[in-house]
Image 1 (cartoon, rainbow, N blue to C red):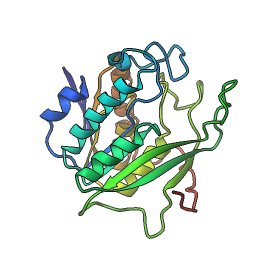
Image 2 (cartoon, rainbow, N blue to C red):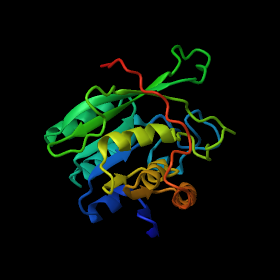
Image 3 (cartoon, one colour):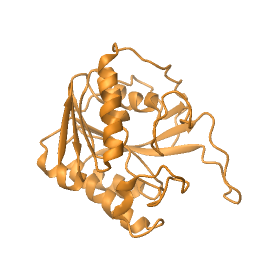
Image 4 (spheres, rainbow, N blue to C red):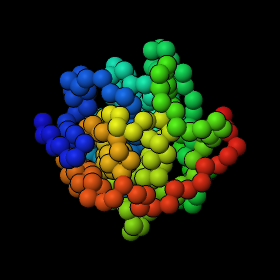
Length: 252
C-alpha cells in the first residue's frame, strides 16, 4: 500500500474496502463511485477504462459492481461524516440513499445538468443530458449554500483534448465538485473520497482550503491524481476556471 502526503492531502494507493476501516472520522465524503464503465475499456468501451473495475466478472456485471460500491459506501458512512455527496448511476442511487437513511441521515437528490451533452449512440434513445447524485446530511452539518440554493448544477463535461481533461474516462468537472465542497464542507475540514480516480476532489480541496483523504486502486490514475493535486497546491487559491451558474428552479 502506497501513501503520498501532498500539502493537506493524503493519497492512498489501494482497495478502499481495505483502506477505509483503517481511517478515523472525517467531516465529509465527496465521491464519484464507478458506474457504467467497462472492465476492458471506458464508459463506451474505449481505450481509457478504469482497471479498478477488474473486480467485476464482466462488462455488464452490475450486481458485482454495485456490491463493491455498496460495501465501500457503508465503510465511508462508518467514518461518521456530517455530509455525504456521491455521484452515481440511477441503479445505485437507491441503495446509497437507503444506507444513509438507515444511519439517520436526511437525503436529497442532486442533478448535474450538462451544457453540451454528447450525442446519443445509434439506437440508444435519450441523450444523457444529466447525471444524478445523493446528498446526505445529519445534525451539525455545515451549509454554505444560502437560503434558496438549487439542487441542480449546470456545467460542461470534459471532452478529449479540452484544457483540464486528463486520461480518465469519467472525469467530473472541477466546478461541479467545487460546488459540492463550497456548499457542504467548512473550510479546514477533512474530505474523504474513496474512489479518487484522477483526483478532482483533491484538487478542489487544495484550491478551497479543505483537507483531503483519497483512495484509488489503479496506479496510473493514482499517479495522475498526485500530479494534479501537487500542481493545485502550487497555484494561488483562486478559481482557475469560471463556475457555471446554478439552475435556479429546484427539481425532484
